[in-house]
Length: 106
Image (tube, rainbow, N blue to C red; front, side):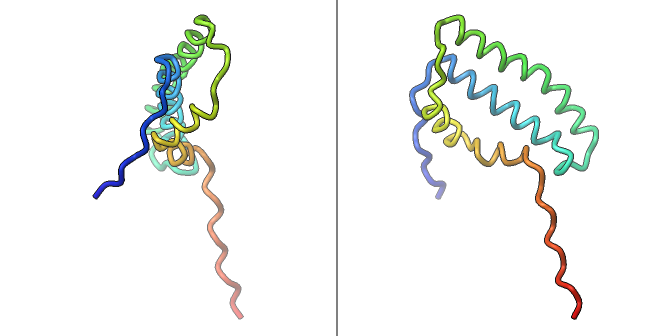
């Protein structure tokens, strides 16, 4: 049985667009991450797509600013990111830790 996710917090349309675009950028950065990927073509395709998604993220923030939405409600937006698996997705952007060194021969 799949656990029930908490509901998304109430977001404006602009906030929802911001969260969606942000997560799309994070997903693409995760696919480009050279410490995790093994395929240059897949990384190249993700990098090409990143340009468009970064522009969409900028546009979402521009719309918010022009509408007078000058404050980002980080608590609400963070809850939305958590519900949408943002912690795991953003973790793919980080550099993989060094593998544990084997114990020395005694």
